Image (cartoon, rainbow, N blue to C red):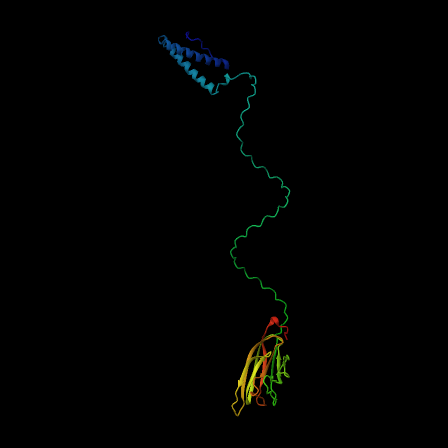
Length: 291
């Protein structure tokens, strides 16, 4: 024990003594290692237990100092002098986003913006389903009753009436059977249209003592011609003809002789020759007369 440069004494509760002991232990171990390597023959077996104890104690205390696990009895000391302020560190990394703030009170309503440009016309949509039938509406007010236009006449030859013998003469059916609208003139033998539309005219002639040929005329133009030959029959024959004509107000229709020698119109108490006409349907759009 006298060959080591220190003497072992009990530890005090002072950090300085403990630290110095560690330093002395480290130096003693270094010197001992150096001496042992220089002269191994000088080493005595009695020093081995002491060396082993020092190594274990050195390792145990060094581990406590490194891990800052010193016993509380070795850490008692007076506060040191405050150190000088450290150098400013480098800027840290950006922090995480903060939480959303609470809803603030609504701001004032802004001014109305300008109207945007019209968008493109979209594609035509599909046809929707048919809706349910609506409720039946109220009945409307009664309308005015329309009166269909009328025009009709019928006239015949009087018994013993002398007939014209010249070509182009009007056959005057002088005895009116019906002429409520007065469209036929029994003195002139002419029908004058008042209601525009389509009319039906028919001539029935009793032929006796001579052949007969006459024409149905419209405004001086022949519309149809009719002829019956008389062959010295003991009894009268008949000749009939008819036609549909479209007339406008002012048009005139009549019957006239076609040939002077064919004038076999006949009328008696037993048989007649008649001229009849009536309106089939009117041109409603152009009609000014409804009664």
